Image (cartoon, rainbow, N blue to C red; front, side, top):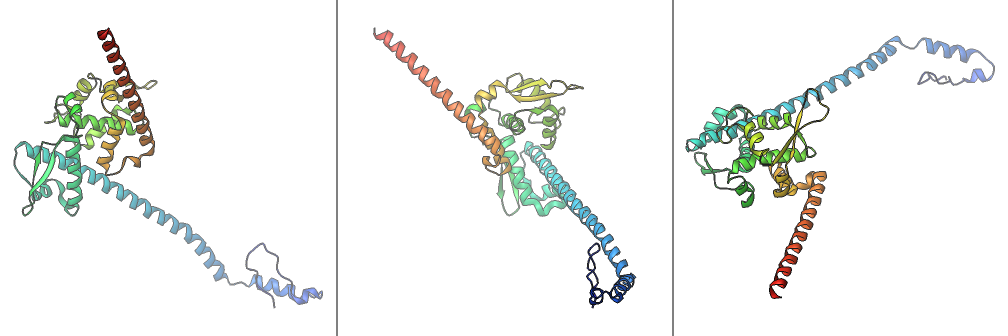
Amino acid sequence: MLQTPESRGLPVPQAEGEKDGGHDGETRARTASQERPKEELGAGREEGAAEPALTRKGARALAAKALARRRACRRLNRTVAELVQFLLVKDKKKSPITRSEMVKYVIGDLKTLFPDIIARAAEHLRYVFGFELKQFDRKHHTYILINKLKPLEEEEEEEDLGGDGPRLGLLMMILGLIYMRGNRAREAQVWEMLHRLGMQPSKYHFLFGYPKRLIMEDFVQQRYLSYRRVPHTSPPEYEFSWGPRSNLEISKMKVLGFVAKLHKKEPQHWPVQYREALADEADRARAKARAEASMRARASARAGIHLW
């Protein structure tokens, strides 16, 4: 018997009648081909047409899910920044802050995420502003801010900035942004970071005064930051980089560790910056060894002259 070809374009197998020179096999083959049910062909076309539609539908669903995740992440970050500002304002009155107040005025319908939000807010308060968030009444979920911890647990850098922990925390945030973006950050990127922290560059902040003035007049003039125009930009754009004082006083490894703590990761999570920080540590160690050797040589020379 003849078999219907499974795919078009392939040769039709010969029947026994064709081998003997007969035409019955050829006639039956043409008949079988012509009489293929139209419903089957129609069904095949419908199935073929349905596949792209399903694919487009699936792609739209994935895009919608990704967009929803991004929006949820942005809202969570915005809520953390707003909670930080709320806690700082409440602390000015030195009154305890309750969980119910935080939920009512800031967190709202995200109250199921309260543990994560409060933990992230505490990290920002600790490393950026120099405050520790303490829960002193677990029964009533009451919190207070303690302004006793040094942001970097280092005294020498804080003394350089006049003992101002929050100012040092803000400087470290800017240095971290610059370092993670290839040792340069556009001016607009710095202002965007301030927005994410709940600050307006040109609006008064009770901890920093006017943040833009603090950055441009203090950090830049004190040479913690360098500020210059980006070549060949029209309209002109400007960028920040580490100033010579930051390069002398603050190591890249320390700044990378600061960034890692904010993100709850290890410094090795950013391999490019980590390798650069290791090289910087080696350079600093060699420079320190040369300086110590030079001091010992001068001390020996002075001692020799004195003895002579």
